Image 1 (tube, rainbow, N blue to C red):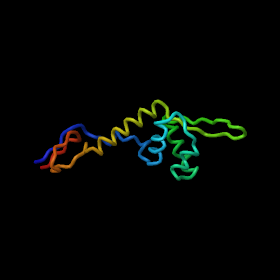
Image 2: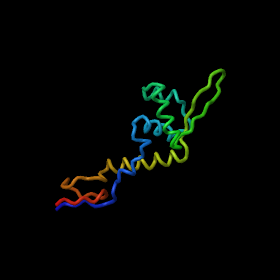
Image 3: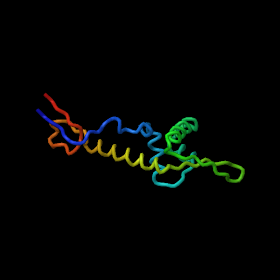
Length: 123
């Protein structure tokens, strides 16, 4: 019988706000800067303004993102920033992804004992 031991990676720890690649990328961009232009991120992602707006609205609704309207001459520019809660959530989610990628949920018989992961018993 093979056994994996370690801390479980419960699916409940996966933050739905970041499971969409576009939202994760928006957060990743904002995690390293104070404010970034909506249009700059949208162009970098290569998505429509409508789709970008949906992702931004979702992140704003869960409290992870703040939207600023900045007047520049006759134009109003939209800038985005992660909230403190958004930065913490993004950091936790990224750490979760790293743990999974580094073998936190290892398969039995891979030649090396897992250091973390759920307990799985095979009979």
